[in-house]
Structures are given as structure tokens and as C-alpha cells.
Length: 80
Image (tube, rainbow, N blue to C red; front, side, top):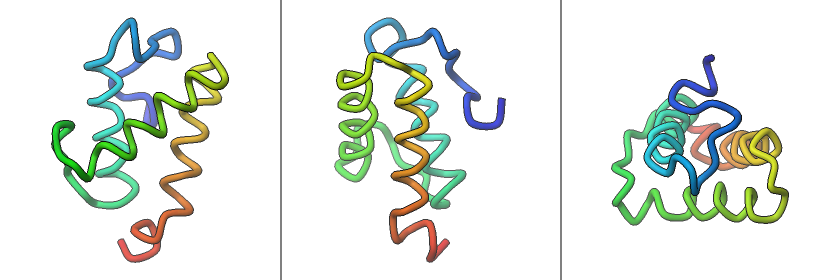
């Protein structure tokens, strides 16, 4: 429940987009210490990553793993 605070694995970007945005925002705060509004320009690349990963795999588990790896390899992770 630490990584999936606002979503269930069955939730997709189409079935529950608000929960996806909220969970992604939560992960950005947890991994980078940045509280971003889902409407901000800084949030857009992360939303794109999550949605593109889902479109490419159709697997929510793989998608969230991809997002977490992206957050870890990003320079903001090391500077936080």
C-alpha cells in the first residue's frame, strides 16, 4: 500500500484517471520531495511516462514499476 496509495492494480488511466494522477503526484512527493499539481508543466512528463508505459504494456503492474524506475534514475531522486 505504500506505492499504491490511491490506486488499485485493476485501475487503468482510462478507468480511473483521477486516482492515477493522485497516485503519481504522491510518488513524486515520496521519491523526489516535490509536491506537483497534476495540471503543472512539471507533472506532464511523468503523466506521459505512466500513460505511455500503460499503452505499451497494458499491464498496470509493469506500468507502475516503470514509473518507479524512472523516478529512481532521475537526478531529483539523488538530490532529495
